[in-house]
Amino acid sequence: MTLSLRLPWPLLRVLRSVVSGTSASRGTPQRDGPPAINELYHARRLSLVRLAVLMVDDLPTAEDVVQDVFAALYQRHGADLHTIADPHAYLTAGVMNAARSVLRRRRTARAYVPPPPPTVPAAEEEALLPEEDHEVLAALGRLTVRQRQVVVLRYWSELSEREIAEVLHVSRGTVKSTANRALTILRDALSESRR
Image (cartoon, rainbow, N blue to C red):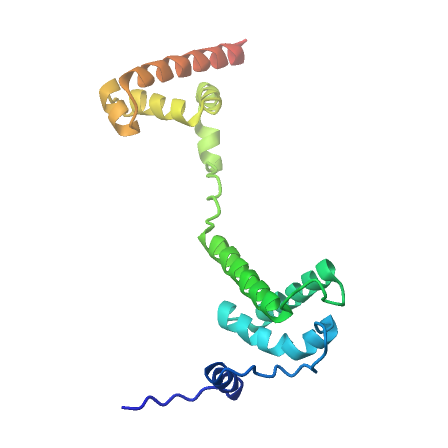
């Protein structure tokens, strides 16, 4: 059984050179030292963009990745690349790392869920509430989330300390101390508002 795949000719040329043990020509003129960055750019840009497109699946982003890698290379090493042993491998690794960074940023951006907008009571509710209720709501706003949970579960839902502890996954002592602190804050806030 023979497997027949249609591969692009540049990939076939590279695979043939790897199998035969000869080096594949990358289109750069042979010199004694490493190529200058402009020669390297003209010789490798297209293949690096193709590599980046395979990673990020987006041509404009792939082009940006390759440009950023070449800019970082120039900024770090200058136009003559004498300090780099293998500039081709350096660029390939840089493109792969930059493409992974793009993918990480995309994953983070997709995972972000903006917080829901705060609920605003209807105008009728505000107008129909007595003044004392406004004071109580303002005092509740001074409590921490945990304190507000304990107060609401205790006095609105009429749960026992044991039931509140189970719901909030805390000890009964924590429920008692949190309720005590919350009631102290509420008393102080309501006494201030009545002065």
